[in-house]
Amino acid sequence: MKSVLIKNIKSLYGIIQNVSIQKKSGTEMNMLDSIDNAYLLITDGIIKDFGVMNDLPETTAEVIDANNGYVLPCFIDSHTHIVYAKSREEEFVMRIKGKSYEEISEAGGGILNSAGKLQAMSEDELFESAKARLFEVIKFGTGAIEIKSGYGLTVEDELKMLRVIKRLKAISPITIKATFLGAHAIPTEYKQNREAYINLVLNDMLPKVAAENLAEYCDVFCDQGFFTVDETERILIAAKQYGLKAKIHGNELGYTGGVQVAVKHQALSVDHLEYTGEAEITSLKNGNTMPVGLPNCSFFLGIPYAPGRQIIDAGLPFCLASDYNPGSSPNGRMSFVVSLACTQMKLTPEEAINATTINGAYALELSHTHGSITKGKLGNVIITKQIPSLAFIPYSFGVDLIETVIINGAKIN
Ligand code: NIG
Ligand code: FE
Image (cartoon, rainbow, N blue to C red; front, side, top):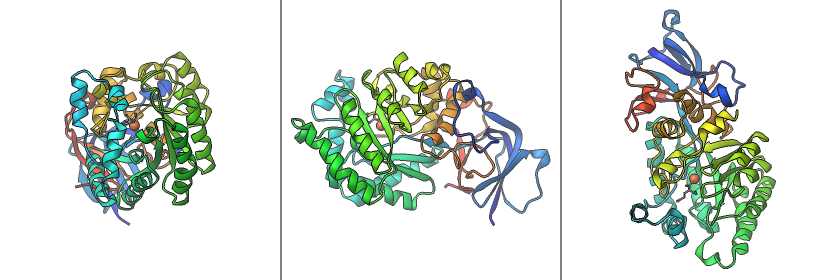
């Protein structure tokens, strides 16, 4: 039995006593329970006990001195595309000069650009570069992550991406969930015959992904210029038959019905939501689908932000993720996502932390083990440098305030 005791914690944040709480909604999102001057005991990788320093138990545990830093649960990043071949800064420069994301996509750039590069790269090379990104974000405080395919767009290359994710799972200290996103874009050679590509996803890709047990979830980019609501429905119905729940890219580029189709098919989450109005909010209220904002993408592409404030004020839960990918969010630092949510979506720091911890865990079906300081959950925590307050985290945007990351009770170096 190996125990680790973190002592001299200025404030231990993100406590949820009741392990059966899976997510926070509406006004609950502003509540982030804490204990000042605290300790935290992790035994065999699991949170065993916590309390005030005056009640510190006798223990032979290895001691980590938080030195008056704050301790929070690790971030849960429920939406990433970290398996990719090359960066895309040439498109970034094209956008600076006036081209839009959609214009670049229509001209064969964007996702198709990434697909071409990924198809030319070996599985081993992809694995090495994705592994570097995985360990990069763990050092930024991410304690569980979702990774999508979607830059393969051929049967073999989609499987190649998912096999890379499977290999990452085998070496990763943090939990990884894999999502099949064959319907990310229509390849150029299918532009005149979209139906043939949909059939490839339905009849070739999905059965093979399921047979090799390569994914937990299925995603579709349901948006203007990408996949229609009808196409999305057909893919989600088929995916369900293979046991894959839905996580949807929706309403990034317009009011396209992505939210409504996600709720209708009991998607676990619907992500992006830059175009979300009353109809979308009403739809979300009629289901259990987690709305997920991706503010890095709005920041980087210069598009509207998802209305996180209105979503929470409607009594709904709200989650935030990085969308780490080479096209719309080449950055996986979740503390920056928290800053953007506060400055641009007007979330309070407490709401933004709940959105990136317990609600992220819900969006990956990990609430029973991740996303809060709860006895019995994994000992995945961030120890901060000495800072004056919780609000100082989003206030100091872009600044690295993490002193130590602990995963399963062990320090990450
Ligand atoms: O979430 N919007 C769709 N997919 C990704 C971006 C893909 C890309 O541009 O490479 C996203 O933003
Ligand atoms: Fe995405």
